[in-house]
Length: 251
Image 1 (cartoon, rainbow, N blue to C red):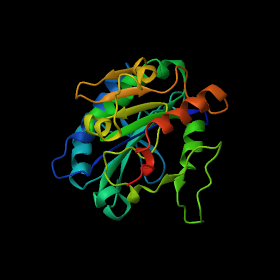
Image 2 (image 1 turned 60 degrees about the horizontal axis):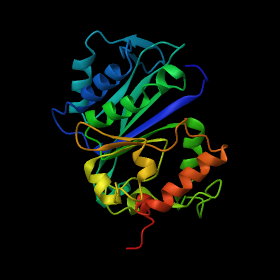
Image 3 (image 1 turned 90 degrees about the horizontal axis):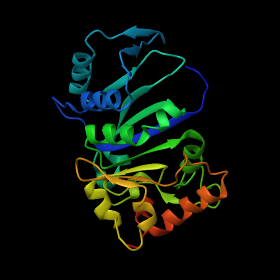
Image 4 (image 1 turned 180 degrees about the vertical axis):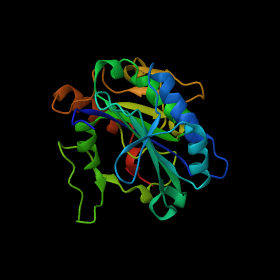
C-alpha cells in the first residue's frame, strides 16, 4: 500500500461469539458509507492480494473461529482496509474480552466528506461501546497518553493528560481516549455524562445521534491537527470536560 496519510478508525465492542454476524455488518456498513467501495480481497501469508468471490461466507467462517481477518479493496491508489483483533480479558476493562475493529482509509476529501458516516456505520455494525476516527498524525500523539508503559511513566506529548491502561479502566463503556470523530454508544454517553445542553453546546453543534441511540461527536471542523493550537486547545478542553475518559476521574 502507499505511504499517503491515513484516517485511522478503531471501534471497541464485545468479543466475537459463535455465528456472529457483526464482522459482515461492519464490512457492509463501510461499503455503504463510501459509495463505490468494494472490499473484495484478502492479503495472503505470502503478502499477495487474493480475490474473495464468497467474501461474506469467508468472513462468517472466520467469525466462528472468533477472528476478523483483514479485507481490503486491493487498490493501491486508494487503499481501504478493515480487520479486527481480540483483546484478552487480562488486558481489557472489567476483565471483559473485547473486539478491537481497525480500519484505515486515505486522508482525502472523498473520505473526509463521509467520515462521520463511516465511523457510524462500522461502529453500529459491530455494536461498539465506543470508537473514533482520527488522522494518523494526531492518532500517534494520542497513543503516547496511555499510562503506564512498560518502559516506565507515561510521556504524553504536547501537554496532553496521561491516561490509564485499558485494563485499569472500570468499564468497557468508558472511552480510553478522544479522537477527531468520536463514536459514543448510548451507554458510553451516559457513562461520561454527555450531553449536557449547557456545557456541551459547542460539541452538540458538531454532533448527531445514531440510529442505535448513540452519538457521533466531531471535535473540530477540520480534521484534527495537533500542530494547530486551536485544535490542541479543543482536545484539551474536551479532556477537561470528560474526566471519565481514560480513567482519570476520582473513584
